Length: 323
Image 1 (tube, helix red, strand yellow):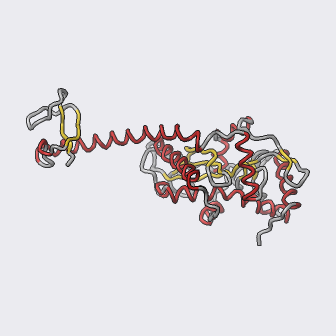
Image 2 (cartoon, rainbow, N blue to C red; image 1 turned 135 degrees about the vertical axis):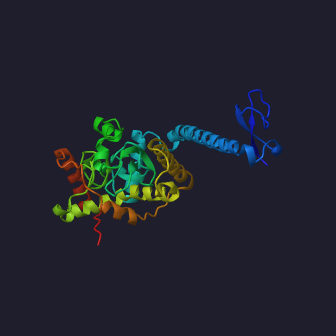
Image 3 (cartoon, one colour; image 1 turned 180 degrees about the vertical axis):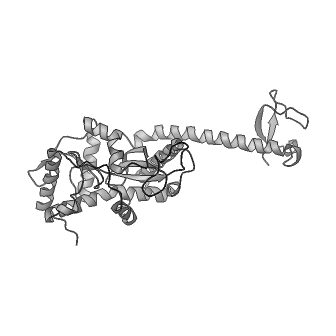
């Protein structure tokens, strides 16, 4: 039987009259200490000490694990990598020149001290935001964790590193190319829902009040491609079920847990392959009732032109009308 005993600085096992100082070690000699009696408090101290040390030992390997595996299973996107991702979207989801699907997820956390309502979202619980871009196989291309729960998806995106990289042209997006079976040249884009701004590199659906047949067809095609990130969130939470309830740590370690779960999500897909089926019913319901704040209501003419190009292309090539 393994028990904890107290060892002084010289290494001798502390007896009943020994001074309590030094370190705790494991031994199989149960006779050195009794689990009850005068040294019950020693057992309590030892238990707490070991628990604290184990938590410290857990955090360090997780950080090392992330650094070691991130470059393999969630590498920084290169131009060639993004081109390959666009071919997957074209083949699997009928959306050419798409390099990713963007969305955000509220991850429940315990309320931080002195945080006020900063992490309190419109769904009436405390959370931090996981913003992610997923590929056609529901792997995460890039993630950003730590946005405060009170922010909208659009507000989180505007304050994110991803937005700054895209605005500076530093995300390695390939040069525009001609869409298949057409003479229309369009840039590579990321797809998102109506909570996000319309940008030259970021496509969102047309508002319901402005729909005609061509625009509805575009919205349907965009929805097919966009649901990959919703499915990725669903798979992530159901496999790493710590994300289905409030994370019982501070926000700093909560971010680390979420990042690690996302990396493990990619590792599992890389090893076992992806599931071609995607059931996003629950996720879609949540998105439909999402608060729409912080939107960019003044997109550039170039952004509108890009969306019109895709709208025209989808209408003239392989129409997709849901009934």
